[in-house]
Image 1: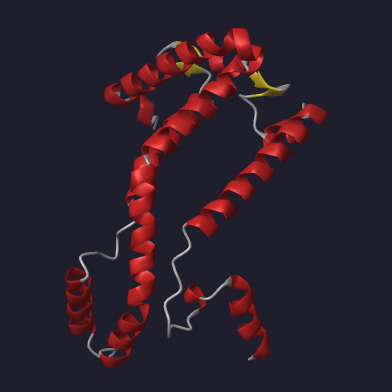
Image 2 (image 1 turned 60 degrees about the vertical axis):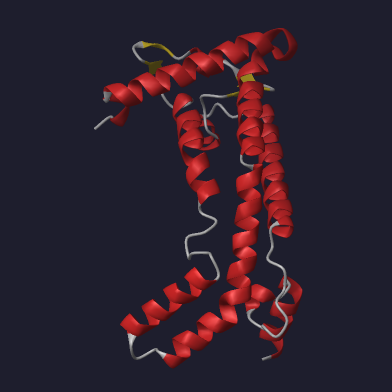
Length: 209
C-alpha cells in the first residue's frame, strides 16, 4: 500500500517537492548539478536552527533525568514487588520535579516528518504524477537518486561515489560526537552509575571489576 497515494499526504509531498525544486533552481547558478543537495543541506540547517530552543529543553530534561536517577533506583528497590505503587511513586516524583519520563522527545518527533519527507523525495521516480527532477541532480558526481548499496550492487559506483559517501559518513560521526558531548548530562555528585560517568571512567570501572 502506497501511503502517499492518500490525497493529503500526496499534496504535502508535492508541496515539499515544489519548495525544494524552487530552492534548488535558485541555487543552480552557484552550485550547478549539486544545487538539490545544497538545498537539502540548507533546509536541514534551517530546521535545526528552529529547533535550538527545543534542543536546550532536551538537554535540561536529560540533566534532570540524570539528577533523579539515584532516587528512581531507590524507588525501584523499595517497591520492586509492587509495580503499581512503584509507578505511582515515580510519577509523583516526576510531577514534583516538573518533568516527565518523556521529556526531551520533542526534537525527535519534530524532525521526523521533515526527515521522512526529504528521504521520500529522493526515493520516488514520480511525484504527484510528474517526473521527479531531483533525481537528475548529483553531489560532486554521486547521483542523489542512488544509494551506496544500489550503486555497489548495480555496478555504477565510481570513485566519486565512495568519496562523497565517505565524507558524509565522517561528517555524521563528527556531528553525533559533538552533539553527544554538548548535550551530555551534568554529572551528579554521589551518583556512580555509568550514565553519570565519563566514558573512560565507566570503562575503567568495568575493566577493573
